[in-house]
Structure formats: C-alpha cells, structure tokens
Image (cartoon, rainbow, N blue to C red):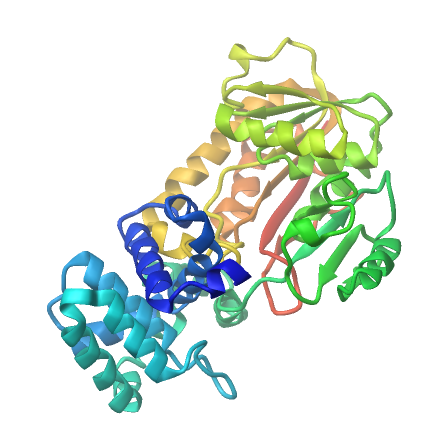
Length: 427
C-alpha cells in the first residue's frame, strides 16, 4: 500500500474494496472494478480486495452461518470483505488489521446499517473457532476455490492438488526479465543492490526475483527498456522457440500477442521478423507500448488468429508461438478473482477455442517449422489433453525432441506460475 492510500481512512478503502468484491461476484474482472476506483485509493483498495478474494470461500460460508438470508449485495460484499480481513490465515499469522480497528471501520463504512455489521462481526470474533469448525467439511470454504475447480484439480493432479490450492493463497513474487540486449540477470541484481533493492537471479536465465515487490518506477532502467516484469514460467516461451534453431530474419508469428511480453522476449534474444497478432485492437496497443519502451520492432495486426484467410499473406512462418486463451488457472496468485469468475463450462468452451486456433494456424507453418503451444493453465484439458487430441488429428505433427517440452509446470511454493508448454515439429 503506497503512502497516498495509507493516508486514507480505512473505512473509505473498505468501501472501495467491497465494491470491487461485489463487482467480481457479479461477473466483472477485478481489473475493471479497480479502474473505477479513484487513483489515490487504488493501491490500498487492490491490497484489501486481493486479500478478500483469497479468503472469499471461507468468508462466504461463515456469512451463511451468521446471516442465513443474504443481505443486499453491497452490504453483503462489505461483510464478506471484513470477514476475510478478520480471517486467521494459519499458524503464526495474523489478520492485516487489529480486530477492533477493522470492526470499527467496517461499521463506519456501513453507515446506515452499521449496527447490523457491528453485531455480525463481533459475533464472528466471539464464536470464531466454532464457526470455523462448522464449515471445515466444505471444500470451497477450506480451500477458497469453487468446488468444481477443486474436483478438476483432484482428477488432474491427485498427488499435488492440495499443494496447488494452498500455493494459490500465497502472494506471488515480483519477477523481472532483464533485456538480454542490454545486460545480464547477475549484473542487474548488483544494480538493484546499489538502489537498495534485494533480489536474486535465477541461474541460466534472464530472470530476477525481487525480495519485495516495488512500483516499476523504482526499478533502475525500467523506463529505458532495460528490464520488464514477467513471471519466470512465462519467460520459458521465447527460449524454447528460439532453441529450435531459428535463423536471423526468420518469420515468426506471435498469434495471441497482447500484452506483448513474449513478443518482446523473442526480439530481445534474436533478430527475427515477428508478426504480433491479437484479436483485440485495444489490447494490441499494449504491445505497441511494450515494444516502444524496449526499443524493439515488430509488425502488429489486429485480427483473429483462427481465421487466417482474413490476414495471412500465404507466406509460411518458420515458427509460431500460440499463447492461447485459457482459464488462467495457473496465475491465480496474481489474479485471485479468476477462480470466482470462471465456471466449469468455461473449460470446455476454452478447449474448443484452443483446438480451433491450433487447427487454423498449423497450415500457415512451413514444413520443418515449429509451433510452440502454451497456456497459463493447470488443467490438463487445456494442456496435455489438448495436444494429445491435436496429434491425433494431424499426422504431420510430432512433439519436438530437441529441446524437449516441459509440459505442465505447476504453481508450487518454489516455482513460478502454472503453465503448459508443448513444442511441435511439422514433418
């Protein structure tokens, strides 16, 4: 929370955070909800909303015990936000605010219904152990994810599902990608140390992990394009595709390019002729901004990658990067609203979109070329299951043996985000 947010009354931040939680429960993304928040209050509101969404499953179950008939949506969101902020996170941890402060400020935020909020929250504090015991058998309350999500993880990852869910509750580290044209990860760590920022380099990569997140304006050389923010798992895409032996000037398609991190990484590592494609013109503007800051060049085009007849010039690509639309189930630490926005039916619909994109792009790849398929998902239907089905449909597609694909990367405590990678060779 920055200084301007810290100077605002907690009641005001709670009001904004509750509005954001209410928006997510109504199906809007947290990013959209925060965009409507006054700029001075946005960092503090985001911190509170992140916390509330991480513990929303338990807070919802307890609220149902305390108030069986749900109050109006705005008041319910305030109650859920306050309950989540009072939630015991585990051994040795404590809520982010003193209990009496939180209750008093929640009452102030409730205004006309303050007496009701006061009674509910104080009853929770009195009966907390009994209430937590009463909801202990509810998986959505225990793991703070929808039941269908938990069940899918249990099927896909019977040995790791609980670790994945527990990791989703942690705050994600801030990871940087050092521009390989400008410096090395080790040299940039030393530069951060000079600026009073502790960090470590990940061996053999351009990735640097900060000990504590900071605004990008505090990063030396950020504005000059020396470094970008990108998770370590996402940084595996460009090296995988380039390790396949792309010649200088090779034609490369980044099929779903926005916001441009992987596009830029490709160009930082090699001199390539890159076409950055995205179906959303507004999101494509972020690719322009990223490339401009990094002083890199690529052709950009707003078009549906799944309809090559509308944009392809008929000249085959040497390599294709397909970072396909997905559930984002591997980046829940960074986007805690995702778990509450997704529905079980979304996975089937997304898998159809992924299959459509794969089938449409495969003919645009030169014989002997490589296509790297990736998603930031932990669900096998969007990863290995998708690729297994694709290989059945296309006899000229085989998994590349060199470099080998990492497959599913799970978001476990010492790992980066959850991702899936499969590098395919066109025979």
